[in-house]
Length: 136
Image 1: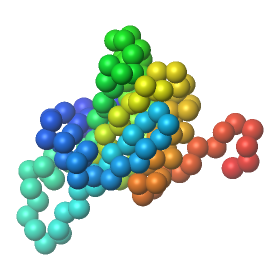
Image 2 (image 1 turned 45 degrees about the vertical axis):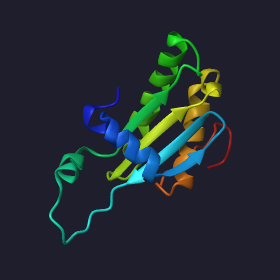
Image 3 (image 1 turned 90 degrees about the horizontal axis):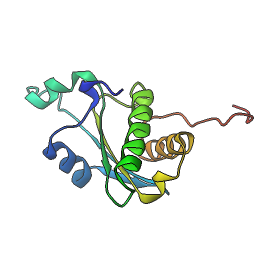
């Protein structure tokens, strides 16, 4: 389960991340990242004070992915992956993950590999996944 401080809730946060953030597309996912950069000389805003909990993740899983059962399965997999990755992502980052229709047939390992690749492309400092049987 993804802890409460690590979830995006309000529409404004989703919109800001998707519109003003960077984007990286993969076969089954599109990842949007917005990194809050605060001026150290300025007074912290209320939003910056709330951000102490770490990176925040939001999911978009539309009906194009499948019926409700499939969408919830994809969302559960993505939430689990986000919970694993939250210690690797900078605390000032907001991440929105949009699942594409192919995510319905992708397994968790493939979604993790795609999400890590997108995060690396966005400069979020995530280490690559080493597949079993491959040298590190």
